[in-house]
Image 1 (cartoon, rainbow over the protein chains, first blue to last red):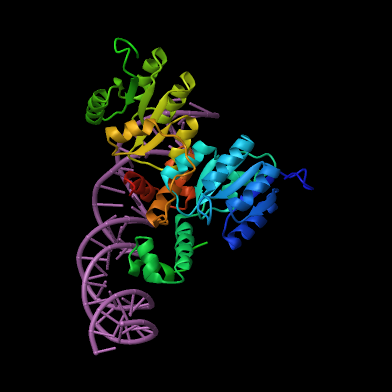
Image 2 (image 1 turned 45 degrees about the horizontal axis):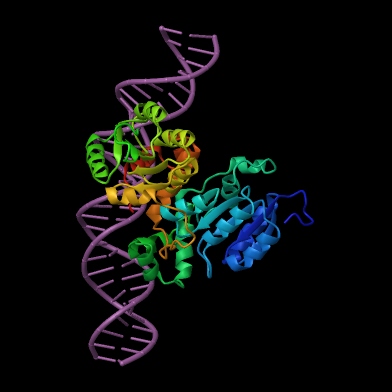
Length: 180
Length: 180
DNA sequence: TTGGGGTGCGACAAAATGCCGCAGAGTCGG
DNA sequence: CCGACTCTGCGGCATTTTGTCGCACCCCAA
């Protein structure tokens, strides 16, 4: 992954959400990475084996094989690869697993590009990462709710059940615009 | 810690809750371990340095130094020591930290002796089942707060400022045990 | 029609948050 | 030593949010 951008660190981004993938890819390119995309573990494996990346962002739960498989392979290919795991289904057990398999850091979605870059650790060419501002809790909640709502095709009752939140509360939260 | 019980594996149990410590000690002795007790990291350090244990059970949050300090020392003394971390304030951020420092497994209290003993045998697997349920908003908030708190080296005022949250509110949230 | 799912919303009780202040601690420089 | 700055935890009380309940309505399939 040190193709024509030999001076930019290579990064493999693996996520089955096409929109998220495109947005994050752009943000990471802006921060100086040379990004290669994959929509699944199966798609990512040959890419990684051909050119082990310096950095990787791996969604944990995708169609097909688990992101855990990719973490293990990436780590075996090059122990120096810095792997950040992203997941909308965060749990301590999977965090332990991911780190033991070689992940550098484990982040719950939503996570913005600055947070992801900061999670790689100190990186000399991305000074702007040092000022990473964490999202407010309200922002986080809003994005999470809307993501699950979308997964439930806009069904408010189902979303409330899935989030273990009261429907009335969910309605109220959705009626409010989030602060920036 | 292989004093007169040369045929029983040595185990260092560090927890500032005297009752819990005594109960768990008894249970672990019944399971064949030779248990040494300590009520704090400060108390445990010289014990560990004198005789690095084969196994350790370390509470994360105690008066005085954090259990994370002890994990690091234990791991440096003997990489083969199997360390299980216990905490009533479980978070992904501390789980990641503990595992990176050398912990074998990370368990949320309450955890019984069987669970702890099983945890000593934990090995990373790519076969782990991934959660099908998205995190609740409360869980997401808890994990986010704890991640930023860790980034701010445990400074509550700084964390509150960074999260644009009132300090009192943050204190209250941190005092509550997270939902599982 | 019935039964099952969904929608939005108000009233009121309960819980959480915001705001303020208190008391204490530590660090640093003058 | 003092003052200035930071931090810590916590209670009292006002305000806001959430939980609970119920109402009214909708759609769809049997």
